[in-house]
Image (cartoon, rainbow, N blue to C red; front, side, top):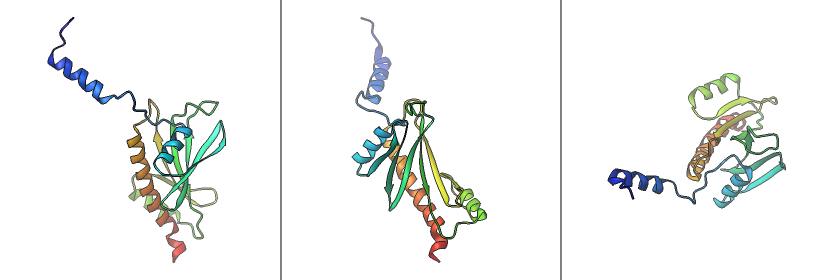
Length: 160
């Protein structure tokens, strides 16, 4: 039996310690994501047919969608998900206000949809093996913060 030496044994120990067999990354599978959300205490309603399904969930008093993207023809093997919410406002923000908001906020893509409702989206790349659950939940917490901030911006004219 060959000797691997201290450095080799250390490297093997690090590889083994950093890749537990029981850890499963989050991928762009709506069933898996819905189960994770429910295990973390969120409601997660699956909507649609097998090849066109998405999740309706909510936090901080706002309902939003989690939409799978870049899927195969059967609606499987998706590569990313998008967090999405539109706000129906009585007085929509101006394009100038939207541009100012966008220039001051790094995360979240914003626009006015066809009904001139303010929308914010955030994409999560889950291709190439996905990401650990902890990182997915961290992204979800970040989404919550930017969603709430954008809701306050979008609805501020309705409160005046």
